[in-house]
Amino acid sequence: MGDREKKSALFEQFARVGKALGSGKRLELIDLLAQGERTVESLATAAGLGLSTASAHLQALKQAGLVSTRREGTRIHYQLAGDDVARLYSLMRTVARNHLAEVEQKRIAYLGQGEFDADDGDAPQEITREDLLARAQAGTVTVLDVRPRQEFRAAHIPGALSIPLEELSARLGELPLGRDIVAYCRGAYCVLAYEAVTLLRQDGRPAARLHEGMLEWRLANLPVSSDAA
Amino acid sequence: MGDREKKSALFEQFARVGKALGSGKRLELIDLLAQGERTVESLATAAGLGLSTASAHLQALKQAGLVSTRREGTRIHYQLAGDDVARLYSLMRTVARNHLAEVEQKRIAYLGQGEFDADDGDAPQEITREDLLARAQAGTVTVLDVRPRQEFRAAHIPGALSIPLEELSARLGELPLGRDIVAYCRGAYCVLAYEAVTLLRQDGRPAARLHEGMLEWRLANLPVSSDAA
DNA sequence: CTAGTAATCCATGGTTTTATGGAATATTGA
DNA sequence: TCAATATTCCATAAAACCATGGATTACTAG
Image 1: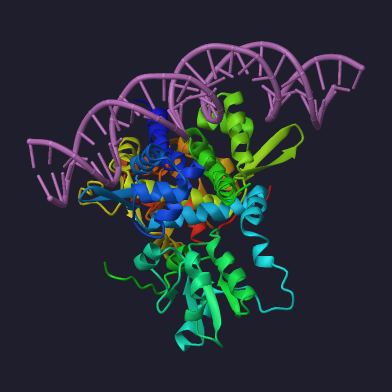
Image 2 (image 1 turned 30 degrees about the vertical axis):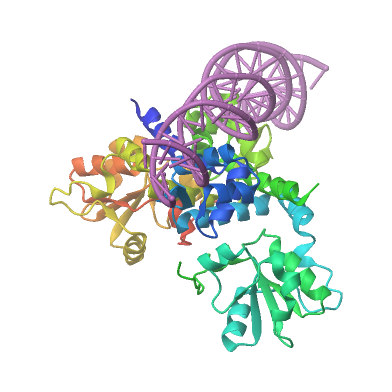
């Protein structure tokens, strides 16, 4: 085998990672896995995929080394193979956003105007990680995690209150009055916190979103708690 | 269009970047472009591709926003769309290496034992960026760039001497005696510096490789010079 | 050891990539 | 305007990928 073929063989290996990242469905799975491990069925449901389809995609990710598995009785839990994978995923989204106009367009279609919302004279819609950390440590803000309970359990901002978005309107009473509320969810392209803030403001609460979400919080090495299983 | 479809549409956009990275040939092109802009023909030759094939791959990269073009007379120069792309490419290789055993295997097949070389009691084969920077600034080492001239011109380590590998054996005399020589080339998986060190040592010169290469040097924000065109 | 659950395997048909070579296009220099 | 050069476009055929549903495997609880 000549040098040229050896080089190609090496680069073909790198490409396995790219191929694995080259499917929207698989990226949705990675997005979920970035919040913590999950079973195949749970992933299939959450991503809106058939079971066989989800299984096949997960195995493609495994072949590419991006996820690993853990068996527990009859269930198999998938998880990201490492923090480097989460970082790669995050950077890939950043690159896409930097260079593809369609990303911004689809983002707005999905999330609404978002960061540059019509501020209507209201308080800002979004606060930075640094601000939130400072205000959380000072105890001057209620941090609200609106992700599904399972994801909260796996990792959350210390001191955060867990109210999954589905339950929020019924549980508004649990939120202390007279304090700003900062809601967060999975990451930069997660819709949950957007909807939570809308709902809270409709109820007259002073609410804002954390910039991005748990994924980026974790990658910034900020403190994280988890409930032991 | 429901929320589910909107989300899929967004993630499908992210996937465009992944798809573009999902081909060994395209990664070889990115690897070359990470050294500086090049024309289609030059890329095709360097990557061992047919002209039409190279052009098609480059356009795929352009569609994914990873490269941009600049026309100069009858030629078109391709270049990476930004430093974030180089960073993504570099991280992707790291992730692949971290999680795919085959990468290490093919790397060794292509480059030789490499970092963990049999040291035969000789001086170490490889030095870090920090060490090189310090020794270069102190002037106690000859820094040797063995990439093609064009790439040297686009960006090189300040003070480095340019001797493309092809010319090295004929130009050994230009290297000052009595000083350590540190050779470098494109990046972590570039073969040129490996071969240069072998050649230099056969000639009895005290030579080592820079850890990784220009790509990683640049991404570490270390100083870079370029020859004005 | 049998029934039931979770996940994977497998065959299928439909879509998308890929390499290639020749035709078409754009630009420059004569 | 014409010829030469660099690149892209296009048609084609081979290969790879994808979703799907039914069969199969792996494990657990009884």
